Length: 93
Image 1 (cartoon, rainbow, N blue to C red):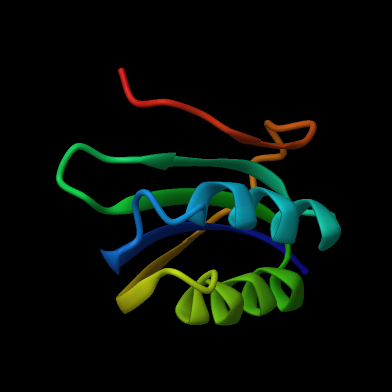
Image 2 (cartoon, rainbow, N blue to C red):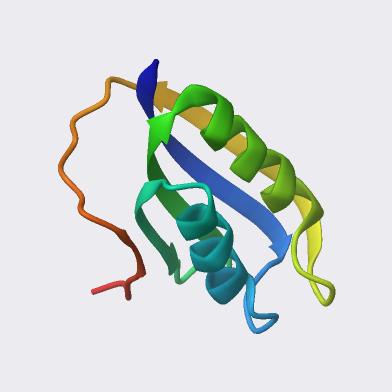
């Protein structure tokens, strides 16, 4: 079943290669979407693909890369839209 997840990661998640790891993990799971830093220190992820693969990504995000200290990960499940071709690091406006 394809689905979309809007994910927010809290804690020490900026300046620790969190976006880079997220992009690599998501791409390896054949997910599409994006990841970006937010001005308040959180990392935001929008991922689309198979629900089981997104759940695997969420588990990896909860652990984070070696230098991260993830305090919490919030997930909002949404309807699949199929609007992305790949998974990229983007930047806030």
